[in-house]
Image 1 (cartoon, one colour):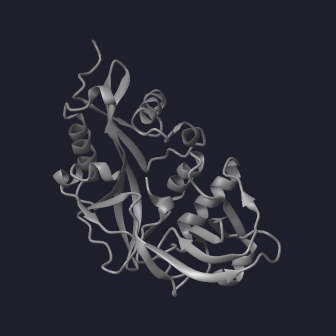
Image 2: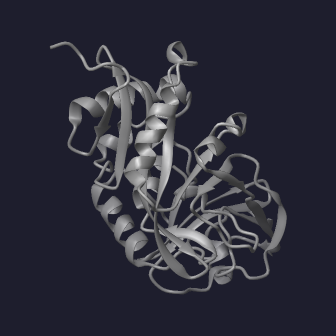
Image 3: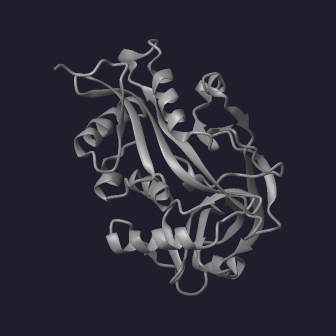
Length: 291
């Protein structure tokens, strides 16, 4: 028998090594800077992540992936899914293949809420599947601080033990925001790290890790992973190597910095939601939880 027709969707899970290799070859053809190889080598592809791909001659030509998510919405936990790696290789576009894989991915999601982040160039595509755009807000705070105390050490996710500890804190700890965020997304955050997209992961305490770095006189605080509440303001001097005058947050900081102000709209990636109504209050879904 020959290979299945290109219209037949194949599911790829954590134990499908050969199919995973084909998927990893597909990704950089569609997303110039993205790669799944390192993340896969770390063993981060688990049962929560599944790709729905179209193959031709052993190669993936179109795909839509589904990541299971534990959303936090106004203090409630909501089981949901997030789509990612949606696309088609250039030689096979304009043939409706993206619609085929999208239909398969959404069928796998059933009646659960779904969200995704997409390039602004495809704003007209996702509403065809019942998605609607939803505004994301940037948050900032004016705050002066100087380095003081022992610098928070940098953690290396190349170490399997560090990854396991990170997963446990993410799964069991406090969500960085209750307004519109998630918990237990360590494998999503590790993908950003494996691709070099994330800021350094710094350890303020055994079970308090933050993703942060300084640019100019601004501290960029992308996420907080912790089991217990702590004094973030008092900890900032250990996260900086030069004086700062402001902070930018990669999430809604109502828990950690209630005085943060809205600083414009996040236009780097458009949020689309389906069967989901995020908080009516200004919010930013944590950047390390984007697939």
